[in-house]
Image 1 (cartoon, protein in one colour):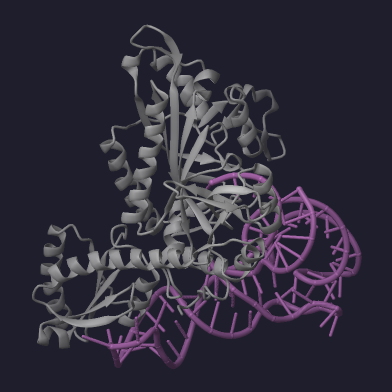
Image 2: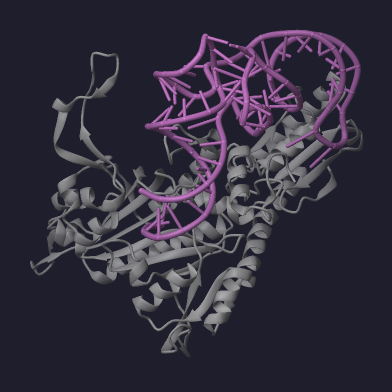
Length: 490
RNA sequence: CGGGAUGUAGCGUAGCCCGGUAUCGCGCCACAUUUGGGAUGUGGAGGCCGCAGGUUCGAAUCCUGCCAUCCCGACCA
């Protein structure tokens, strides 16, 4: 176990907090519920952004930016949307401070805003207000826009990365001429998310759709990807919504089709947030610290020199310089930690804590033998290999680590996804071996709610391409046509 | 928003019951010896004891109020 990190078996949530702080990903800020994302954490987010951004562009989307502030009146235009977000909005009421004469800075009551502004909890309303001006004809469609932004939701209870008052995300907002096209878009973006989360983050997901209870406020259908964390709790990693014509109607966005008939446009929205960082951390890491998938690790390879005299360091440095050039050609990021203020053992522990996938240690002995010591973070194994062909070896090893991490997480998810047929068994498993519980449900919101009230488990999703099978609801015994995935969730 | 806990050096803490200007460890700085798994020694720097009142000759300690953070619940990405 690493210094200062509690074992994840002892206290999982404390382990997570320790990891975030000690691995230098983020720290608490003076503002309740808000965190400071530190350079190391932010560089992971930047990688996530870069990959997703490319995927969005490849699927035809463009970035734009809409304001942080939303006039309050916009908000009330879509009824269920207000219901969903009203309770957690920060509101700007004044635009000036003043000195009260006693040296205190206070709100200037004379500077009250005519119309209060909401700090965006999401941007549907201001975007659809804007789209009204952008869309007149089918020729203006589809409109495929994404924005990278911060949003604020005044949550009662916050957790680093998983639920913060302010968080970073991207939100895609698209407009289409037909319902089919909008649904296809929502499904396409769900696939993009699943592809990214599985192949870059190495986190296996279940694609599905939400029940009406769990749907986004204002959506007709919500698609999601759900991942299982190491403590057996589910985490929603991304969502994609088919919004129907709700927002188009609320903001009066109509277009003329080819027959010159006026109709409301069809909409989608989709997003992932810094919460993905939470999924990344919780899926792979262990008691020694973070385990990062090579494809998202800010540092993929770290080189630690071991030497007694300066000339030894010079020899090692010369060799590392060559290795660095080779690896850069392969787009592999390498860091040569030649600080002489820290000893090798300290550095080993530090990079393990930070989840660097591969460590190369080179000492005088290695220089004589033309070898290096290679240590894998995922398996915590070490091997001595020849310097010749090292760059190729590292390249292969990084790919192997990426696959191994994913495989490990997949095995875990599979092993913790269980079919359950009785309510007693359902409750027992939730307490003894939590995970995804695949069970029959009679399809009513009342049953879903009762199960939630009694067990804290929610329906995470109805898996896409679910196989149909006759069964009985675990709570009511009423007939059911398919299993749904239950879990306790973040 | 309810319940619980905590606030003392950059971090973690002792002291609080029983009032006398603050303990220890890590980290930091300097020098030396070290360097293949979190080095050792010696010397040193660092404190509005969360904030504001009150009691007292005297408050980290007692009293009142406030603030903040964390944890657990209800609400949510």
